[in-house]
Length: 438
Ligand SMILES: Cc1ncc(COP(=O)(O)O)c(C=O)c1O
Image 1 (tube, rainbow, N blue to C red):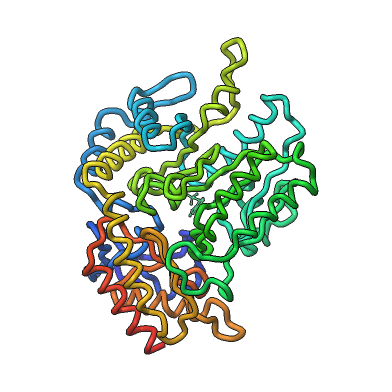
Image 2 (spheres, rainbow, N blue to C red; image 1 turned 30 degrees about the vertical axis):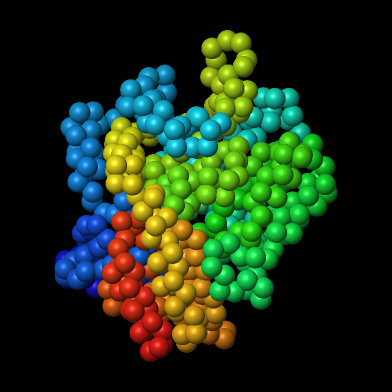
């Protein structure tokens, strides 16, 4: 255990094997630009933007200054029947980044809250427009939509559901996942095969009858399950089927938003416009917790069309549009824009792709995949011990000065968009060496 900490016992760590971690902790206590620093001062190259969030790198002076200034000016403001001007300005600014007909923001504090909020907006919208039989939700296998009851119900990661399986919300189906190594291994960009997997949506919708289906939610690229990239044409096909049956399409862009794919959102990268977009992480670059749901005009208008001034949606958080989050959001977005970071992500993507794919043929590597500045190297599992190689990799990369994300035996990358070629090379060289020694 670290000498500076008296006891690590009381912090019940999230999504972590607490006993194993506390025996052999991996601690960081400072960050700047592309790097974390351990309590002993060792440099750790951040290849995962913390947890897919620090898209502008760590500790950007303009973001730090904005947060400090806001803390001094006003700590907190309620947004139930009161308002802080900066929150309205942030929403206006965000409307200029979202697809054309998506111009409204509902602010939350996390991706999980954004997902549950989006599901609630979808259900309430169907009721508001007189289609109250539309209550069914459709998610996808191997998707991650956070940890709220809505999110784990539409989510498709078995471990996240298993301890709660009797308490998941009813009326949910799942599309098949699109990860098909037999046909698509070592794809660069969008995999060639699998568009027909979207047609399962038609089957599910017809099984229940379209008049009972409210919304479909997918991550354009599934992040947490190991960077699963949609087959060519797949997302467009989903959109067509939703249009045909008048079903809402929700893109969970908690990871893919804010430059990760070289565009504002995956919606623009793939030229498919959903009805709702969930977001968090890159919204503030991770500096202050914040999430948002971006809402199509048609949906917002439906809620506003009723006469009278009553509350239109019975939903909200004490910390919706918290002043510190809004300050971090506005400053981070200003940095993205003034430093051209989304464009930079697009420019660095081919380099990143070549470097990642140079690991093809190294020991244990059964797939490499990428899109924008998001990528994964999948390793073959040790027989009978799925995830063991991944944990070994996590420890060895950290020991060698690298932070990557491991999901089972899949190593995922989503570096800050400020990454330089030398960082990419350093990461790949380190990983190559470790793979050869594993
Ligand atoms: C696609 C997606 N949705 C939702 C979430 C949940 O976000 P949070 O951890 O901020 O609640 C995540 C987090 O990784 C995510 O990747």
